[in-house]
Image (cartoon, rainbow, N blue to C red; front, top):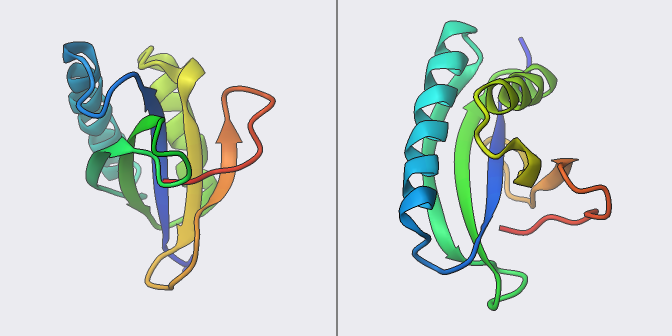
Length: 120
């Protein structure tokens, strides 16, 4: 059996609280990912947070956390769901970290080609 991983989908925000559309986006992304991960028996959505980025307090982000049973399949499914559902796929970052271990997230997908680092 594959090792579980944390998978986080990150969206940029314009403010710490986000707009009404950001709140709508959060609810839809969490709903769609929960359904897809359950249907494919890959994992579940574990929650979200939003506010200042740890790396740059002047930037704001929304993080949606999932626990996935298979890292690569989980990433592929998340990308597919967000793209096909038109849930701002062109703005996301996806990063993973082994579940249950201390460490940092590793960037696995960036919608913008010049992004090479990830921070919550």
